[in-house]
Image (tube, rainbow, N blue to C red):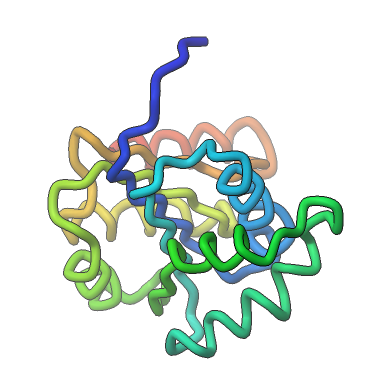
Length: 167
C-alpha cells in the first residue's frame, strides 16, 4: 500500500447517501476522518438520495439520524459543524437519467471524483451506465462498490463485468 495523498479538491459522491449504510457507517466514519484532520479541507462530500431535502432539512437529517452513530467520546460540536458544512445533499433517483444530468451540473467541473455506491448490487450496473452517460466519469474518477457483490460467483462476475464496461 502506498501513502498517496488525497487530492485536495476531491468530490466524494455517495449514491445512497441518506440510506442506512451511510447513516450508520459511512458518514460517521467520514466525520471521524474530518475530526482527525485526515480529509483535505477542500474535500466535498455529496450525499445522494431520493428525498428532496433543502439545506435546513438535510442538516436536521444529519443531526437526528447520523449524529447518534458518532461515539460520545468523539463528539465535538465545532468539528461536527465543520463537517456538516462540507456535506451537500442532491436528490437522485438511481433510475432517472435527468437526475444524473442535474448532478453533473452541480459538481465542480474537472474535479477528481469518487463515487461510492451504497445501494443494492442490482442497481450498480445501471448507476454506472447513467454516470457515464451524464459524463460524470473520467480518467480521474473512481467507482467504489459496496459488497456483498451479487448472491453467488456468477452474479458477482456479471455485476463486475457490467460495471467494468462503464468505467
